[in-house]
Image (cartoon, rainbow, N blue to C red; front, side):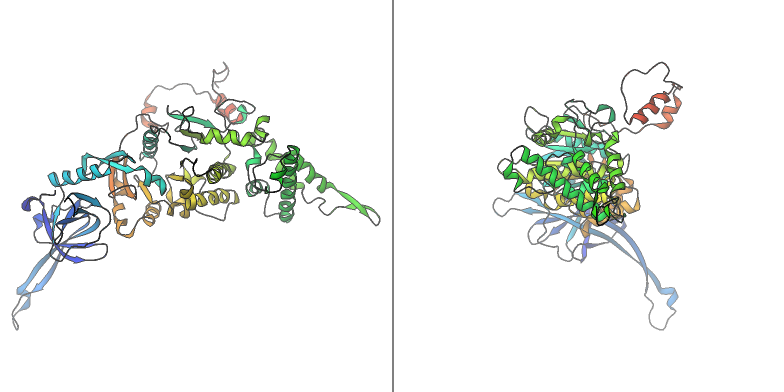
Amino acid sequence: MLQFNEHEHFLGSVREIENSQIILHVKSDDNLRKAQVGQLAAVELVFTGSWMICMIEKVVKSASMANLSPPGENEESFLHEEVANRVLLTPVGAIKISDSNGSRSFSRSIDQVPVIDAKSYILKDAPLTSFFHLLTREGQSESSFVFGRYSISRDAEAYIDGNKLFQRHAALLGSTGSGKSWAVASILEKTAKLPSANMVVFDLHGEYKKLSYVKSLHIPGPEELGSHVENLLYLPYWLLNSEELLSMFVDQSEHSAQNQVAIFQEKVLDAKKKFLKKLGKDEIVRTFTLNSPVPFSVEEVIAEIKYLNEEMVPGARGLRKGDYHGQFSRFLTRIQAKIRDRRYGFLFDAPEPYHTYQAMAEIIHKMMDFSKENTNIKDIDFSEVPSDILSVIVGLVARIIYQIQFWTDPEERNPIAMVCDEAHLYLPGKQGQNPVSQRAIEAFERIAKEGRKYGVALVIVSQRPSDVSSTILSQCNNVITLRLTNGSDQATVRKLMPENFKNLLDVLPVMDIGEAMVIGDAVLLPSRIRIHEPVEKPLSATIDFWSEWLKDSEPIHFATAVENMRRQGRKRGKRNAGDSI
Protein backbone atom coordinates (compact mmCIF):
# COMPACT_ATOMS: atom_id res chain seq x y z
CA MET A 1 0.00 0.00 0.00
CA LEU A 2 2.78 2.44 0.92
CA GLN A 3 5.18 2.81 -2.03
CA PHE A 4 8.14 5.02 -1.16
CA ASN A 5 10.71 6.66 -3.38
CA GLU A 6 14.12 6.36 -1.71
CA HIS A 7 15.29 9.74 -2.90
CA GLU A 8 12.07 11.63 -2.11
CA HIS A 9 10.87 9.92 1.06
CA PHE A 10 13.79 8.25 2.87
CA LEU A 11 14.44 9.91 6.23
CA GLY A 12 16.83 7.82 8.30
CA SER A 13 17.45 4.60 10.23
CA VAL A 14 16.42 3.54 13.71
CA ARG A 15 19.23 4.22 16.19
CA GLU A 16 17.47 3.95 19.56
CA ILE A 17 14.14 2.53 20.79
CA GLU A 18 12.30 3.37 24.01
CA ASN A 19 8.80 2.49 25.22
CA SER A 20 7.17 5.61 23.80
CA GLN A 21 9.84 7.03 21.52
CA ILE A 22 12.00 6.08 18.55
CA ILE A 23 15.19 7.96 17.68
CA LEU A 24 16.37 8.04 14.08
CA HIS A 25 19.86 8.72 12.83
CA VAL A 26 19.69 10.91 9.72
CA LYS A 27 22.90 10.90 7.68
CA SER A 28 22.46 13.93 5.43
CA ASP A 29 21.17 17.44 5.93
CA ASP A 30 19.00 17.01 2.84
CA ASN A 31 17.14 14.16 4.52
CA LEU A 32 16.92 16.08 7.78
CA ARG A 33 15.21 18.98 5.99
CA LYS A 34 12.41 16.61 4.97
CA ALA A 35 11.36 16.27 8.61
CA GLN A 36 8.92 18.75 10.14
CA VAL A 37 7.49 18.64 13.63
CA GLY A 38 3.93 17.27 13.53
CA GLN A 39 4.47 15.41 10.26
CA LEU A 40 3.88 11.67 9.94
CA ALA A 41 6.57 9.09 9.25
CA ALA A 42 6.47 5.34 8.62
CA VAL A 43 9.00 2.91 10.12
CA GLU A 44 9.28 -0.54 8.59
CA LEU A 45 8.53 -3.58 10.71
CA VAL A 46 10.99 -5.89 9.02
CA PHE A 47 9.68 -9.35 9.80
CA THR A 48 6.01 -8.75 8.97
CA GLY A 49 6.08 -6.31 6.06
CA SER A 50 3.91 -3.93 8.12
CA TRP A 51 4.58 -0.31 9.06
CA MET A 52 4.63 1.56 12.34
CA ILE A 53 3.12 5.04 11.93
CA CYS A 54 4.75 7.77 14.01
CA MET A 55 4.50 11.50 14.48
CA ILE A 56 7.65 13.61 14.34
CA GLU A 57 8.14 15.19 17.73
CA LYS A 58 11.58 16.75 17.49
CA VAL A 59 14.24 17.44 14.82
CA VAL A 60 17.81 17.89 16.08
CA LYS A 61 21.04 18.90 14.35
CA SER A 62 23.89 18.79 16.87
CA ALA A 63 27.64 19.09 16.48
CA SER A 64 30.60 17.86 18.56
CA MET A 65 34.38 18.25 18.27
CA ALA A 66 36.30 15.03 17.64
CA ASN A 67 40.09 14.71 18.17
CA LEU A 68 41.78 13.16 15.13
CA SER A 69 45.42 14.11 15.93
CA PRO A 70 48.10 11.40 16.20
CA PRO A 71 49.65 10.96 19.67
CA GLY A 72 52.34 13.50 20.56
CA GLU A 73 51.42 16.09 17.92
CA ASN A 74 49.66 19.45 18.25
CA GLU A 75 46.05 18.47 18.90
CA GLU A 76 44.48 21.84 18.07
CA SER A 77 45.22 21.51 14.37
CA PHE A 78 43.52 18.13 14.16
CA LEU A 79 40.12 18.89 15.80
CA HIS A 80 37.21 17.91 13.56
CA GLU A 81 33.50 18.80 13.80
CA GLU A 82 31.16 15.78 13.75
CA VAL A 83 27.47 16.38 13.03
CA ALA A 84 24.74 14.12 14.45
CA ASN A 85 21.29 14.53 12.92
CA ARG A 86 18.48 13.02 14.94
CA VAL A 87 14.72 12.82 14.61
CA LEU A 88 12.51 11.81 17.54
CA LEU A 89 9.33 9.92 16.68
CA THR A 90 6.25 9.16 18.78
CA PRO A 91 4.41 5.97 17.68
CA VAL A 92 0.68 6.48 17.10
CA GLY A 93 -0.32 3.14 15.53
CA ALA A 94 0.51 0.55 12.95
CA ILE A 95 -0.58 -0.59 9.51
CA LYS A 96 -1.10 -4.32 9.80
CA ILE A 97 -1.54 -7.05 7.20
CA SER A 98 -4.27 -9.64 7.66
CA ASP A 99 -2.97 -13.22 7.58
CA SER A 100 -6.17 -14.48 5.95
CA ASN A 101 -6.59 -12.27 2.89
CA GLY A 102 -3.60 -9.91 2.92
CA SER A 103 -5.76 -6.81 3.43
CA ARG A 104 -4.30 -3.88 5.35
CA SER A 105 -5.77 -2.04 8.29
CA PHE A 106 -4.70 0.65 10.73
CA SER A 107 -4.72 -0.04 14.47
CA ARG A 108 -3.87 2.09 17.48
CA SER A 109 -2.47 -0.99 19.23
CA ILE A 110 1.22 -1.70 18.65
CA ASP A 111 2.35 -5.28 19.26
CA GLN A 112 5.73 -5.09 17.50
CA VAL A 113 8.56 -2.56 17.54
CA PRO A 114 11.12 -1.87 14.81
CA VAL A 115 14.60 -3.35 14.89
CA ILE A 116 17.78 -1.30 15.01
CA ASP A 117 18.68 0.11 11.56
CA ALA A 118 15.11 -0.31 10.28
CA LYS A 119 14.37 2.29 7.61
CA SER A 120 12.00 5.22 8.11
CA TYR A 121 10.22 7.27 5.46
CA ILE A 122 8.37 10.59 5.43
CA LEU A 123 4.65 10.30 4.72
CA LYS A 124 3.95 12.84 2.01
CA ASP A 125 2.58 13.01 -1.53
CA ALA A 126 1.20 9.66 -2.76
CA PRO A 127 2.08 7.62 0.38
CA LEU A 128 0.35 10.19 2.59
CA THR A 129 -2.72 10.14 0.35
CA SER A 130 -2.79 6.34 0.44
CA PHE A 131 -2.52 6.30 4.23
CA PHE A 132 -5.35 8.77 4.75
CA HIS A 133 -7.53 6.93 2.26
CA LEU A 134 -7.02 3.89 4.47
CA LEU A 135 -8.02 5.92 7.53
CA THR A 136 -11.07 7.30 5.73
CA ARG A 137 -12.16 3.84 4.60
CA GLU A 138 -11.78 2.40 8.10
CA GLY A 139 -13.38 5.42 9.74
CA GLN A 140 -16.54 5.06 7.68
CA SER A 141 -19.05 3.02 9.62
CA GLU A 142 -22.63 3.15 10.76
CA SER A 143 -21.51 4.69 14.05
CA SER A 144 -19.21 7.41 12.65
CA PHE A 145 -19.63 10.91 11.26
CA VAL A 146 -17.43 13.34 9.34
CA PHE A 147 -16.01 15.96 11.69
CA GLY A 148 -13.75 17.76 9.24
CA ARG A 149 -10.60 17.22 7.19
CA TYR A 150 -7.08 16.38 8.28
CA SER A 151 -4.87 19.47 8.36
CA ILE A 152 -1.91 17.66 6.77
CA SER A 153 -4.04 16.05 4.06
CA ARG A 154 -6.91 18.37 3.13
CA ASP A 155 -8.42 15.85 0.68
CA ALA A 156 -9.02 13.23 3.39
CA GLU A 157 -12.13 13.40 5.56
CA ALA A 158 -11.67 12.90 9.30
CA TYR A 159 -14.23 10.62 10.93
CA ILE A 160 -15.19 10.39 14.58
CA ASP A 161 -16.74 7.25 16.07
CA GLY A 162 -20.00 8.47 17.62
CA ASN A 163 -20.29 5.46 19.92
CA LYS A 164 -16.88 5.96 21.50
CA LEU A 165 -17.23 9.75 21.59
CA PHE A 166 -20.28 9.61 23.86
CA GLN A 167 -19.71 6.30 25.65
CA ARG A 168 -16.52 7.56 27.25
CA HIS A 169 -17.39 11.26 27.61
CA ALA A 170 -15.70 14.11 25.75
CA ALA A 171 -14.13 17.47 26.50
CA LEU A 172 -14.30 20.24 23.90
CA LEU A 173 -11.89 22.98 24.91
CA GLY A 174 -10.66 26.21 23.36
CA SER A 175 -9.98 29.87 24.05
CA THR A 176 -12.56 32.52 23.21
CA GLY A 177 -12.72 33.02 19.45
CA SER A 178 -11.09 29.68 18.59
CA GLY A 179 -14.25 28.24 16.99
CA LYS A 180 -15.54 26.30 20.00
CA SER A 181 -19.21 27.16 19.48
CA TRP A 182 -18.97 26.21 15.81
CA ALA A 183 -17.51 22.85 16.81
CA VAL A 184 -20.42 22.26 19.21
CA ALA A 185 -22.94 23.30 16.53
CA SER A 186 -21.26 20.98 14.02
CA ILE A 187 -21.70 18.00 16.38
CA LEU A 188 -25.30 18.99 17.17
CA GLU A 189 -26.11 19.39 13.49
CA LYS A 190 -24.91 15.90 12.61
CA THR A 191 -26.51 14.31 15.67
CA ALA A 192 -29.88 15.94 14.94
CA LYS A 193 -30.17 13.92 11.71
CA LEU A 194 -30.38 10.64 13.64
CA PRO A 195 -34.00 9.51 14.16
CA SER A 196 -33.65 8.69 17.88
CA ALA A 197 -30.91 11.07 18.95
CA ASN A 198 -31.33 12.53 22.42
CA MET A 199 -29.21 15.47 23.54
CA VAL A 200 -29.66 18.26 26.06
CA VAL A 201 -27.57 21.41 25.76
CA PHE A 202 -26.96 23.45 28.91
CA ASP A 203 -26.84 26.85 27.20
CA LEU A 204 -25.77 29.70 29.47
CA HIS A 205 -25.89 32.49 26.90
CA GLY A 206 -28.64 31.39 24.51
CA GLU A 207 -26.12 30.66 21.73
CA TYR A 208 -27.87 27.61 20.29
CA LYS A 209 -31.55 28.37 20.86
CA LYS A 210 -32.15 29.73 17.35
CA LEU A 211 -30.93 26.62 15.51
CA SER A 212 -33.83 25.22 13.47
CA TYR A 213 -33.30 21.61 14.57
CA VAL A 214 -33.28 22.50 18.27
CA LYS A 215 -36.21 22.61 20.67
CA SER A 216 -35.56 25.69 22.77
CA LEU A 217 -36.52 25.68 26.43
CA HIS A 218 -35.64 28.44 28.82
CA ILE A 219 -35.89 29.14 32.50
CA PRO A 220 -38.46 31.95 32.86
CA GLY A 221 -37.34 35.37 33.97
CA PRO A 222 -39.30 37.69 36.31
CA GLU A 223 -41.55 39.07 33.55
CA GLU A 224 -42.60 35.63 32.30
CA LEU A 225 -43.71 34.21 35.64
CA GLY A 226 -47.18 32.72 35.61
CA SER A 227 -47.11 32.17 31.85
CA HIS A 228 -47.87 28.72 30.45
CA VAL A 229 -45.89 29.13 27.22
CA GLU A 230 -44.73 25.73 25.96
CA ASN A 231 -41.02 26.54 25.86
CA LEU A 232 -40.84 27.77 29.46
CA LEU A 233 -39.20 25.36 31.87
CA TYR A 234 -40.23 25.91 35.47
CA LEU A 235 -38.26 23.97 38.08
CA PRO A 236 -40.42 24.00 41.24
CA TYR A 237 -38.45 24.06 44.50
CA TRP A 238 -39.65 20.62 45.59
CA LEU A 239 -37.47 19.07 42.86
CA LEU A 240 -34.41 20.14 44.86
CA ASN A 241 -33.01 17.54 47.21
CA SER A 242 -32.27 18.30 50.83
CA GLU A 243 -28.65 19.37 50.30
CA GLU A 244 -29.57 21.67 47.41
CA LEU A 245 -32.28 23.36 49.48
CA LEU A 246 -29.97 23.74 52.45
CA SER A 247 -27.18 25.20 50.30
CA MET A 248 -29.60 27.98 49.30
CA PHE A 249 -31.03 28.74 52.74
CA VAL A 250 -28.56 27.80 55.50
CA ASP A 251 -25.50 29.85 56.41
CA GLN A 252 -23.13 27.28 57.89
CA SER A 253 -21.20 30.00 59.75
CA GLU A 254 -24.15 30.74 62.07
CA HIS A 255 -23.97 29.20 65.53
CA SER A 256 -27.49 27.73 65.13
CA ALA A 257 -26.80 26.21 61.67
CA GLN A 258 -26.97 22.64 62.96
CA ASN A 259 -30.40 23.22 64.50
CA GLN A 260 -31.58 24.95 61.32
CA VAL A 261 -30.60 21.93 59.24
CA ALA A 262 -32.23 19.41 61.60
CA ILE A 263 -35.53 21.27 61.96
CA PHE A 264 -35.79 22.23 58.29
CA GLN A 265 -35.29 18.61 57.20
CA GLU A 266 -37.81 17.37 59.73
CA LYS A 267 -40.50 19.84 58.62
CA VAL A 268 -39.89 19.19 54.91
CA LEU A 269 -40.22 15.45 55.50
CA ASP A 270 -43.49 15.99 57.40
CA ALA A 271 -44.84 18.23 54.63
CA LYS A 272 -44.04 15.67 51.94
CA LYS A 273 -45.63 12.90 53.98
CA LYS A 274 -48.76 15.03 54.45
CA PHE A 275 -49.01 15.59 50.67
CA LEU A 276 -48.71 11.84 49.92
CA LYS A 277 -51.25 10.85 52.56
CA LYS A 278 -53.71 13.37 51.17
CA LEU A 279 -53.46 11.58 47.79
CA GLY A 280 -53.78 8.16 49.42
CA LYS A 281 -50.23 7.14 48.37
CA ASP A 282 -49.66 5.06 51.49
CA GLU A 283 -47.32 2.61 49.72
CA ILE A 284 -45.00 5.49 48.81
CA VAL A 285 -45.19 6.95 52.33
CA ARG A 286 -43.60 3.72 53.59
CA THR A 287 -40.61 3.91 51.19
CA PHE A 288 -39.96 7.52 50.22
CA THR A 289 -37.05 9.53 51.62
CA LEU A 290 -36.28 13.16 52.37
CA ASN A 291 -34.70 13.51 48.91
CA SER A 292 -37.61 12.00 47.01
CA PRO A 293 -39.08 14.57 44.57
CA VAL A 294 -42.48 14.92 46.23
CA PRO A 295 -44.38 18.25 46.15
CA PHE A 296 -44.78 20.04 49.47
CA SER A 297 -45.82 23.48 50.67
CA VAL A 298 -42.84 25.64 51.57
CA GLU A 299 -45.24 28.10 53.21
CA GLU A 300 -46.31 25.38 55.66
CA VAL A 301 -42.67 24.60 56.43
CA ILE A 302 -41.97 28.28 57.09
CA ALA A 303 -45.04 28.52 59.34
CA GLU A 304 -43.87 25.50 61.40
CA ILE A 305 -40.37 26.91 61.81
CA LYS A 306 -41.77 30.34 62.66
CA TYR A 307 -43.90 28.75 65.38
CA LEU A 308 -40.82 27.14 66.95
CA ASN A 309 -38.91 30.41 66.67
CA GLU A 310 -41.63 32.23 68.65
CA GLU A 311 -42.77 29.37 70.88
CA MET A 312 -43.39 30.04 74.58
CA VAL A 313 -43.76 27.04 76.87
CA PRO A 314 -45.03 26.67 80.47
CA GLY A 315 -42.37 27.10 83.15
CA ALA A 316 -42.15 27.15 86.93
CA ARG A 317 -42.91 30.88 87.03
CA GLY A 318 -45.15 31.15 84.02
CA LEU A 319 -44.33 31.09 80.34
CA ARG A 320 -40.72 30.84 79.23
CA LYS A 321 -38.99 30.76 75.84
CA GLY A 322 -39.06 27.44 74.02
CA ASP A 323 -35.92 25.45 73.14
CA TYR A 324 -35.63 27.05 69.68
CA HIS A 325 -36.94 30.51 70.53
CA GLY A 326 -35.10 33.15 68.50
CA GLN A 327 -32.70 30.69 66.85
CA PHE A 328 -34.32 30.80 63.42
CA SER A 329 -34.90 34.54 62.93
CA ARG A 330 -32.11 35.02 60.38
CA PHE A 331 -32.91 31.67 58.80
CA LEU A 332 -36.55 32.65 58.27
CA THR A 333 -35.57 36.07 56.92
CA ARG A 334 -33.22 34.39 54.45
CA ILE A 335 -35.86 31.91 53.22
CA GLN A 336 -38.56 34.57 52.87
CA ALA A 337 -36.16 36.88 51.00
CA LYS A 338 -35.39 34.15 48.47
CA ILE A 339 -39.07 33.29 48.02
CA ARG A 340 -40.04 36.94 47.48
CA ASP A 341 -37.16 37.59 45.06
CA ARG A 342 -38.69 37.52 41.55
CA ARG A 343 -35.42 36.27 40.09
CA TYR A 344 -36.10 32.96 41.83
CA GLY A 345 -39.68 32.87 40.56
CA PHE A 346 -39.05 29.82 38.36
CA LEU A 347 -38.55 27.93 41.64
CA PHE A 348 -41.10 29.50 43.99
CA ASP A 349 -43.72 31.05 41.68
CA ALA A 350 -44.33 28.18 39.29
CA PRO A 351 -48.01 27.88 38.23
CA GLU A 352 -50.24 25.52 40.19
CA PRO A 353 -50.00 22.60 37.70
CA TYR A 354 -46.28 22.38 38.57
CA HIS A 355 -47.16 21.44 42.14
CA THR A 356 -49.18 18.34 41.33
CA TYR A 357 -48.12 14.72 41.64
CA GLN A 358 -47.88 14.35 37.83
CA ALA A 359 -45.84 17.54 37.29
CA MET A 360 -42.41 15.92 37.38
CA ALA A 361 -43.23 13.48 34.59
CA GLU A 362 -44.33 16.40 32.41
CA ILE A 363 -41.11 18.31 33.14
CA ILE A 364 -39.06 15.24 32.25
CA HIS A 365 -41.05 14.82 29.04
CA LYS A 366 -40.08 18.34 28.00
CA MET A 367 -36.38 17.72 28.60
CA MET A 368 -35.91 14.12 27.53
CA ASP A 369 -38.58 13.08 25.05
CA PHE A 370 -37.10 12.16 21.66
CA SER A 371 -40.21 10.88 19.87
CA LYS A 372 -41.15 12.00 16.38
CA GLU A 373 -43.61 14.48 17.84
CA ASN A 374 -40.74 16.19 19.66
CA THR A 375 -37.32 17.53 18.65
CA ASN A 376 -34.45 15.30 19.65
CA ILE A 377 -32.02 18.14 20.50
CA LYS A 378 -33.13 20.19 23.51
CA ASP A 379 -31.51 23.52 24.36
CA ILE A 380 -32.08 24.76 27.90
CA ASP A 381 -31.33 28.47 28.18
CA PHE A 382 -30.08 29.25 31.71
CA SER A 383 -29.32 32.91 30.99
CA GLU A 384 -32.12 34.14 33.32
CA VAL A 385 -30.89 32.11 36.30
CA PRO A 386 -29.18 34.22 39.02
CA SER A 387 -25.44 33.50 39.15
CA ASP A 388 -25.47 32.69 42.88
CA ILE A 389 -27.63 29.59 42.33
CA LEU A 390 -26.61 28.74 38.76
CA SER A 391 -24.58 25.73 39.93
CA VAL A 392 -27.49 24.35 41.93
CA ILE A 393 -29.98 24.68 39.07
CA VAL A 394 -27.73 23.20 36.38
CA GLY A 395 -26.79 20.41 38.77
CA LEU A 396 -30.49 19.82 39.51
CA VAL A 397 -31.32 19.33 35.82
CA ALA A 398 -28.34 17.02 35.30
CA ARG A 399 -29.17 14.98 38.39
CA ILE A 400 -32.82 14.56 37.37
CA ILE A 401 -31.83 13.35 33.89
CA TYR A 402 -29.36 10.87 35.36
CA GLN A 403 -31.80 9.56 37.97
CA ILE A 404 -34.57 9.09 35.41
CA GLN A 405 -32.16 7.09 33.23
CA PHE A 406 -31.14 5.08 36.28
CA TRP A 407 -34.73 4.17 37.17
CA THR A 408 -35.93 3.56 33.61
CA ASP A 409 -36.34 -0.06 32.54
CA PRO A 410 -33.08 -0.98 30.71
CA GLU A 411 -35.08 -2.31 27.75
CA GLU A 412 -36.78 1.08 27.31
CA ARG A 413 -33.76 3.25 28.08
CA ASN A 414 -32.53 5.51 25.26
CA PRO A 415 -29.04 6.98 25.73
CA ILE A 416 -28.85 10.72 26.29
CA ALA A 417 -25.93 13.15 26.09
CA MET A 418 -25.62 16.38 28.05
CA VAL A 419 -23.58 19.17 26.44
CA CYS A 420 -22.26 21.35 29.28
CA ASP A 421 -21.43 24.69 27.70
CA GLU A 422 -19.27 27.13 29.70
CA ALA A 423 -18.68 24.35 32.24
CA HIS A 424 -16.13 26.38 34.22
CA LEU A 425 -18.96 28.61 35.47
CA TYR A 426 -20.77 25.84 37.39
CA LEU A 427 -18.22 23.00 37.66
CA PRO A 428 -15.28 24.83 39.25
CA GLY A 429 -12.11 22.99 40.14
CA LYS A 430 -11.50 24.71 43.48
CA GLN A 431 -13.68 22.52 45.61
CA GLY A 432 -14.65 23.09 49.23
CA GLN A 433 -14.96 26.88 48.97
CA ASN A 434 -18.54 27.26 47.78
CA PRO A 435 -21.20 24.84 49.07
CA VAL A 436 -23.56 25.88 46.27
CA SER A 437 -21.09 24.94 43.54
CA GLN A 438 -20.17 21.80 45.44
CA ARG A 439 -23.69 20.41 44.98
CA ALA A 440 -23.42 20.65 41.19
CA ILE A 441 -19.90 19.22 41.17
CA GLU A 442 -21.02 16.16 43.14
CA ALA A 443 -23.91 15.50 40.76
CA PHE A 444 -21.71 15.76 37.67
CA GLU A 445 -18.87 13.74 39.19
CA ARG A 446 -21.24 10.85 39.77
CA ILE A 447 -22.47 11.09 36.18
CA ALA A 448 -18.88 11.21 34.90
CA LYS A 449 -17.97 8.07 36.85
CA GLU A 450 -21.14 6.00 36.42
CA GLY A 451 -23.18 7.56 33.60
CA ARG A 452 -22.04 5.26 30.78
CA LYS A 453 -23.62 2.27 32.57
CA TYR A 454 -27.03 3.91 32.22
CA GLY A 455 -26.62 5.63 28.87
CA VAL A 456 -25.76 9.14 30.11
CA ALA A 457 -22.88 10.95 28.40
CA LEU A 458 -21.17 14.26 29.13
CA VAL A 459 -19.63 16.68 26.65
CA ILE A 460 -17.72 19.25 28.72
CA VAL A 461 -17.27 22.53 26.83
CA SER A 462 -15.07 25.25 28.30
CA GLN A 463 -12.73 28.10 27.42
CA ARG A 464 -10.93 27.70 30.77
CA PRO A 465 -10.19 24.01 31.38
CA SER A 466 -7.90 24.92 34.29
CA ASP A 467 -11.01 26.15 36.16
CA VAL A 468 -13.04 22.97 35.61
CA SER A 469 -13.17 20.12 38.14
CA SER A 470 -10.20 17.85 37.44
CA THR A 471 -12.22 14.80 38.53
CA ILE A 472 -14.80 15.42 35.80
CA LEU A 473 -12.22 16.20 33.10
CA SER A 474 -10.21 13.08 33.98
CA GLN A 475 -13.21 10.94 33.03
CA CYS A 476 -13.28 12.39 29.50
CA ASN A 477 -11.49 9.85 27.31
CA ASN A 478 -11.87 12.04 24.23
CA VAL A 479 -10.37 15.52 24.06
CA ILE A 480 -11.10 17.96 21.25
CA THR A 481 -8.95 20.98 21.92
CA LEU A 482 -8.90 24.07 19.75
CA ARG A 483 -6.48 26.95 20.13
CA LEU A 484 -5.45 27.52 23.75
CA THR A 485 -3.12 30.39 24.59
CA ASN A 486 -3.16 30.33 28.39
CA GLY A 487 -0.31 28.36 29.97
CA SER A 488 -2.35 26.93 32.86
CA ASP A 489 -5.06 25.77 30.44
CA GLN A 490 -2.46 24.06 28.25
CA ALA A 491 -0.98 22.36 31.32
CA THR A 492 -4.43 21.09 32.33
CA VAL A 493 -5.02 19.56 28.89
CA ARG A 494 -1.58 17.92 28.96
CA LYS A 495 -2.53 16.15 32.18
CA LEU A 496 -5.44 14.53 30.34
CA MET A 497 -3.17 13.11 27.63
CA PRO A 498 -1.34 9.78 27.57
CA GLU A 499 2.36 10.36 28.24
CA ASN A 500 3.45 9.73 24.64
CA PHE A 501 0.98 12.27 23.21
CA LYS A 502 1.68 15.24 25.49
CA ASN A 503 4.18 16.89 23.16
CA LEU A 504 1.62 16.88 20.35
CA LEU A 505 -0.08 19.74 22.15
CA ASP A 506 2.80 22.15 21.61
CA VAL A 507 0.89 23.46 18.58
CA LEU A 508 -2.14 24.60 20.61
CA PRO A 509 -1.23 28.31 20.74
CA VAL A 510 -0.68 28.58 16.97
CA MET A 511 -3.62 26.64 15.56
CA ASP A 512 -6.05 28.38 13.23
CA ILE A 513 -9.66 29.23 14.08
CA GLY A 514 -11.80 26.12 13.68
CA GLU A 515 -8.80 23.80 13.85
CA ALA A 516 -8.56 21.22 16.64
CA MET A 517 -6.26 18.55 17.97
CA VAL A 518 -8.42 15.45 18.51
CA ILE A 519 -7.07 12.73 20.76
CA GLY A 520 -8.95 9.80 22.27
CA ASP A 521 -10.84 6.59 21.71
CA ALA A 522 -13.19 8.13 19.12
CA VAL A 523 -10.48 8.73 16.49
CA LEU A 524 -8.24 6.22 14.74
CA LEU A 525 -5.29 8.58 14.82
CA PRO A 526 -4.52 11.53 17.14
CA SER A 527 -4.93 14.25 14.55
CA ARG A 528 -5.03 17.92 13.81
CA ILE A 529 -8.39 18.44 12.12
CA ARG A 530 -10.04 21.38 10.40
CA ILE A 531 -13.60 21.17 11.66
CA HIS A 532 -16.38 21.46 9.11
CA GLU A 533 -18.23 24.72 9.46
CA PRO A 534 -21.86 24.12 10.53
CA VAL A 535 -24.60 25.08 8.09
CA GLU A 536 -26.40 27.02 10.82
CA LYS A 537 -24.24 29.26 13.00
CA PRO A 538 -24.78 29.70 16.74
CA LEU A 539 -25.34 33.17 18.17
CA SER A 540 -21.73 33.56 19.24
CA ALA A 541 -20.17 35.82 16.61
CA THR A 542 -17.43 38.06 17.92
CA ILE A 543 -18.24 41.77 17.61
CA ASP A 544 -15.88 43.61 15.25
CA PHE A 545 -15.08 46.65 17.36
CA TRP A 546 -13.20 48.72 14.80
CA SER A 547 -15.71 48.03 12.04
CA GLU A 548 -18.59 48.97 14.32
CA TRP A 549 -16.85 52.17 15.36
CA LEU A 550 -16.39 53.10 11.70
CA LYS A 551 -20.17 53.24 11.19
CA ASP A 552 -22.30 56.30 11.75
CA SER A 553 -23.52 56.44 15.31
CA GLU A 554 -27.09 55.52 16.22
CA PRO A 555 -28.96 56.65 19.35
CA ILE A 556 -28.80 54.16 22.20
CA HIS A 557 -31.95 53.68 24.27
CA PHE A 558 -30.39 53.67 27.71
CA ALA A 559 -33.76 54.01 29.43
CA THR A 560 -34.80 50.66 27.98
CA ALA A 561 -31.58 49.08 29.21
CA VAL A 562 -32.19 50.49 32.67
CA GLU A 563 -35.72 49.09 32.70
CA ASN A 564 -34.42 45.70 31.54
CA MET A 565 -31.92 45.76 34.40
CA ARG A 566 -34.63 46.62 36.90
CA ARG A 567 -36.98 43.95 35.67
CA GLN A 568 -34.10 41.45 35.20
CA GLY A 569 -35.18 40.59 31.68
CA ARG A 570 -34.83 41.83 28.10
CA LYS A 571 -38.30 42.88 27.09
CA ARG A 572 -38.98 42.67 23.37
CA GLY A 573 -41.20 45.09 21.53
CA LYS A 574 -41.57 48.74 20.62
CA ARG A 575 -39.89 51.40 22.71
CA ASN A 576 -41.78 54.28 24.20
CA ALA A 577 -41.19 57.72 22.75
CA GLY A 578 -39.40 58.90 25.86
CA ASP A 579 -37.10 55.91 26.17
CA SER A 580 -34.08 57.63 24.64
CA ILE A 581 -32.21 59.94 26.97
